[in-house]
Amino acid sequence: MNVQIDRVSARTSAAIDLVEAHSARNYAPLPVVIAEGEGAWVRDVDGRRYLDLLAAYGALNFGHRHPRLTAIAHAQLDRLTVTSRAFHNDQLGPFCAELAALAGMDLVLPMNTGAEAVETAIKTARKWGYQVKGIPNDQAKIVIAGGNFHGRTITIVSFSEDPLAMTDFGPFTPGFVRVPFGDADAVRAVIDDRTAAVLIEPIQGERGVIIPPDGYLQSVRDACTEANVLMIADEIQSGLGRTGYTFACDHEGVRPDIYVLGKALGGGVLPLSAVVSRRDVLGVFRPGEHGSTFGGNPLACAIGTEVVRMMATGEYQQRAAMVGEQFTQMLKNLPSDEVDAVRSRGLWAGVDLAHRDGRDVCAALLNRGVLAKEAHDRTIRLAPPLVIEPTDLEWAMGQLAEELSNA
Image (cartoon, rainbow, N blue to C red; front, side, top):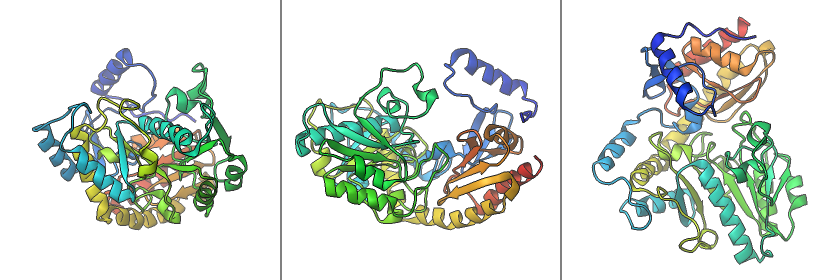
């Protein structure tokens, strides 16, 4: 079934045509052109309102234009934006110190994007493997999970299973061993004396919010500890309050050796990512071995520090947990004959459709004033901002239920 999008206005059509004429086609967005946003709501160029249930894949955990974050951004813009790491800046120290404290770690290596942070974590693990663990040169292995999504750089797609991400982009980077996601015994079985790290998402977001079995994270943690292997948790999507805890690993009381953070860390204002770890792990780097011109820039750090302070109160985690319980109940009320499965944790959910194509349903929701995104084929991923009002969320779930009922 192909849903007919409501007639697109001339203004919207012109904006889309301009993008399609001059921008590489690496995305296939729905035909809406967003011009303004506040909280969980946005407006398009024609003034029509939409409730945002994607939150830029979790980059907008605090909603659009959160006043605390925009105030910090405005103030910093009037002072200093970029220095490069050739010099110190007065915002980097507070950001690193407070983020390290939030994570219960020692050191922070700031970057810009999530993929950059994952690449940084891979480099960290390999260097640690050679210098600390004593793995023979160029023989380090990293265990990864099937169905993963960590980004789209060449090294990262080297261990992807997504044909779209891999086709025509080889040759790929070696040194990765894939095991099924959620199977801790499989992780333990492939670890050997040349294994430097295990890299996993505590919850696989891009795949459709796939939640592993209870005890999985703790079992992986135990296997890594026993074998002197680093556990790397990619919390780029799952971290910073999304699941009702600061980190998704907190659901099992697990602390990895390395956190990989991004998206919400930039407060929905600009890109900011980070690798956070202990001194004996991140301390392996020496000047010149890794870097980024914009990594740790004062504008990003000022905003990131405010994000960390907002997280430190626990307010947003508690809200995600509380509204998340209501969200779960709303999802259970979707028409059962149109839904194969629902997975949710905090304010994050994957809805597997029984008969409809995910993109078609998202197009239909667009017509109803709701922004959502398909994950794969028949799955819809929902990630509303943590500041969303329960009544707004209930309205949106009502729109989804009505759409599915009318199929």
